[in-house]
Length: 50
Image (cartoon, rainbow, N blue to C red; front, side, top):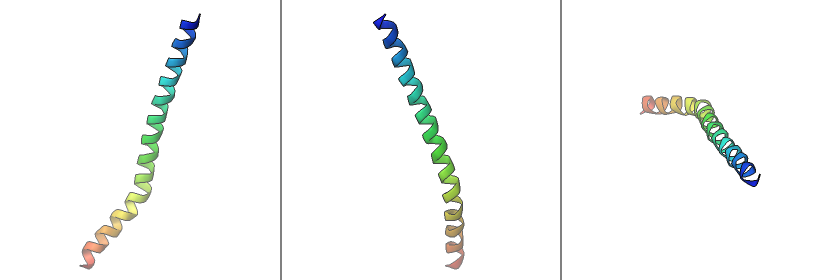
């Protein structure tokens, strides 16, 4: 009985961990696209100005 509960618990935490990693990657990509685009344009503008 306890063994079954432990298996479910470990499976659940593994699922949560995977979800956390996927969420973090998605968030990182989204933030990177939102802030990376203007930053890249500014860098290109800076190079042109020199």
